[in-house]
Image (tube, rainbow, N blue to C red):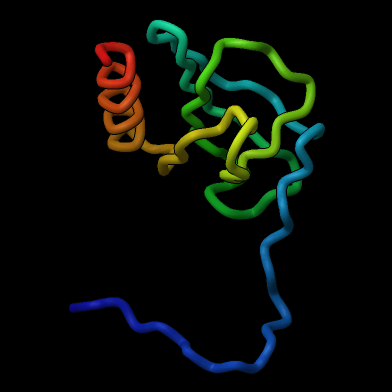
Amino acid sequence: MGKLFNLSTESSDVSPPNPNPEKKSTLKVEFYGAYAIMEIMYFGCTTFNGRKLLLLKDRKYRKSLDPHLLGDGHPVIARFEPTEEGWKLARLCAKELTNE
């Protein structure tokens, strides 16, 4: 059965907090050429229990890292669900980018 979506224009009392880019802990990192895949725990974030799986266009360490796709100059180029399937997809993307 398909998912049901509420298309109401009324505001909700519950909204997930935006991740604070400085309140984080790196759970896992893998490197592919110039690219990095990082699983990060953002404290206080409720979606996926605060876990974000990011593909970055470089291998630089950052004290602060916004997980959103912000465009030119921002290191995050893709996000995936923080699951085994998400890791597989992130690895495929990173390997393909490395082979360009």
